[in-house]
Length: 495
Image (cartoon, rainbow, N blue to C red; front, top):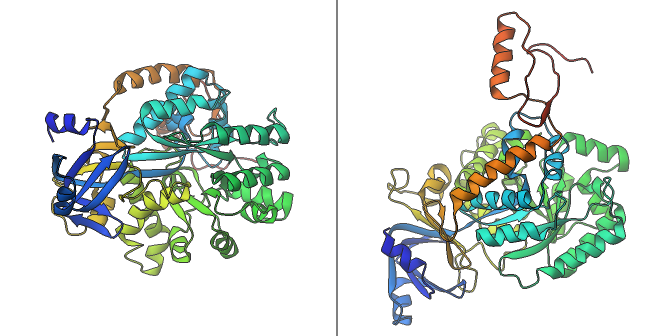
């Protein structure tokens, strides 16, 4: 598409868009048009009928393009973008060694820039909505809200209500602040308030019950990391005699308002609890592979009618690669052993990344689908590329062969936000340059502890071990990080 088309798409609207095809809930539809007005889809239907119904609107033809819903990232941490690479090669529960120290080192500018950088990456990857699970940075959460608005992405914005993890706030102030947060963004076009508790043990029973009640009454989402790591499950069993999800059920905190992040370690009984209570799950396949203990049983969830979406957990902001990872993880963990060659098929993972994700984060009535009355959050995908031009099964091809380079345009709330990978209304490269400066300073002062060295140091240690010499001491795992001593490859460490 040329510059003239871009200028038309940037116009005030209403817009009558005629792509080659539109991805509807029932599948891709040819000869279909949409009218976008006041931030929403006003009409979706056969192109000839739509044009007759809107004779005063000039049709904007979009040859070679598929119009599809934007992706929904059901689990993110926007202010952690400065340390994304610090998670590589690390064992589980890195939040204790990496994320909490890093976010604690962010001032207001750094937190804003980190969040806007994460939003830019998300937009480039086709995400039109992100669910932020709350920041630990000592800044007003409105800093994150401003970054999302300025970037032009829809954000389900969590406020952390921890009161049992060494924080200064008590349960009463945590609930009061939570209630204010829910009211603060009422009616905001892009920011949707949510509550968050990092892990169940980070809040007292009274606060867990209280935030669940507040979220349920407000129709908002409560985000909690649940059943992600073996260590967390075992701590809960020792402390409560119950697994984390069972513990929340015992408190009465499960329900349609709750979004369980990860949920990788689930018993059959816990799957039943999720199904019976309507609790939603964020299935985060890349995060589980990079630093988890298991793959969430997403195919079983789909079969049991458990609500779930797909989340990045801040790993990489590419919606197409996320859908591929979701399908591939199920194939490796479950499909190969049972001879399931389909593993849900392409449409399962596209739905989980769009409509299912919107439902999981509490926005199913607002976004996630190309339908009249919903927000015009959508992508224009170039289907003339070598990967997609010879189309036989569009959902499968998008999952297996799609990538963010094929995204020509990203719209959020009916406005063009990204054009060929660059923001349409602000300077993306300038943000990246400033982020690089601030990240060096933030990581430099953060007491981050890494178990795994840098790739260069690890390769040197491995080479030295093969030669039978003593591995050189790690010079540093990166500015501001503290490496942990560990045995040479092939030797066991004393515990």
